[in-house]
Length: 231
Image (cartoon, rainbow, N blue to C red; front, side):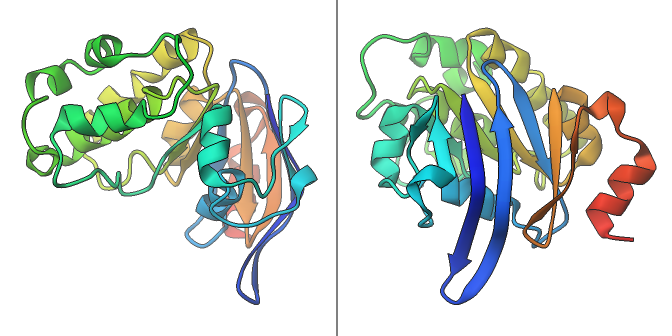
């Protein structure tokens, strides 16, 4: 479904990614783990066109999409749930969700009713400003907004960050329903336990490089610790 080949990324003269090879199969959930500054969010930014890269460095169902404009990549079927949610504060919950549907192709599973079915609290609060939501509710709205585009690939950047464990559980409980409708998922997470619990495969990044890759049940705690911290 999605593949990176020798993906590099720069912030000016600073190189943040060094030749990342990774793949996401149809219907898979892949976790990207690593410490702060490892390059996880940069990886997502390169995939979505927010950072430049070579055309062949990112491929969607075999087609080279690296370096395309973010809006075009979104229309091709890749949606990002950004770190920090980034809802529009002047809009209601429902208006934020509807923005996610802008420019999408007709048809597809996800619409307002189905997003509200996935996160019922959003239906109850659909008319209120997004700023009045709790952190967990804002995260649900950010996920719902991304789903409204009916993506083939959903990229989630630190969706558990700053949330209480019970809220994180509720959000992660939605992942099987999202996968069931054919969406492949990339989860960038610092919470290793949470990520490994739902992932089919995992990549660990360290200083912009892949330090470990495999299926969660094949990796030992010691291997993950070494790949994560480098010691």
